[in-house]
Image 1 (tube, rainbow, N blue to C red):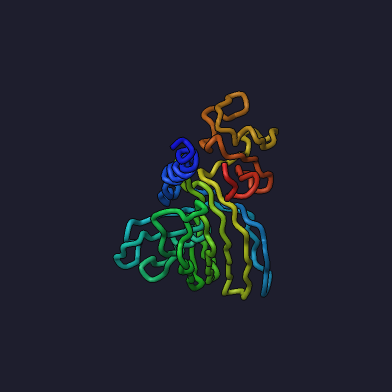
Image 2 (image 1 turned 135 degrees about the vertical axis):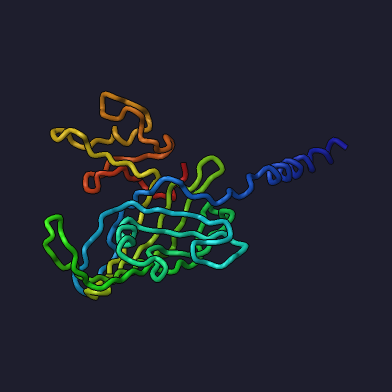
Length: 248
């Protein structure tokens, strides 16, 4: 009898361990804007303006997006700061300044929430004459810009919602016939680490979640203390150290 117990004990332990595995984490996104740092992967056509980083807003809609049909699966909308600014110049009922697609309810085996194919954000408007504060007319040239987000991967855990994501972004300037493809590394909340004092230099201490009034960081950055960050001297924002998909 004792021999039999010794044989089945490891099997019982294995079964108990398997039964205690954490279930998949629900897919969440941050409520605060992300700051996305960009790295150029390729460029084609003419000379496009290069972006080094910007804020990105993400919203998830339970079963229905801002312009999508009713569905049993959540929807996601992604909008760059650039497209957000262009949105003020177009009719939103006719054009879409955000990318849109489906979003899973639960993370996959790798702890990632991967949206389906996202429809590109696409905005165009003709040149127009506007007036400055003195009443002088000047022409604002027209533009046609398309942004396509691909392979967006949001890392989530039960203890930390999706405050980090990786993606690929292609920005097409269809007016000038050029495009740029970027690697994206994003973190929420977006934190400006530039100094209020002209003589001071930006420092990593402004990215710290720990308050320190002596460094100009009286309330802390709001970034989860488990996430390693630094102040990027080019974008003057707190950015991730390493990959947004690195485990904590």
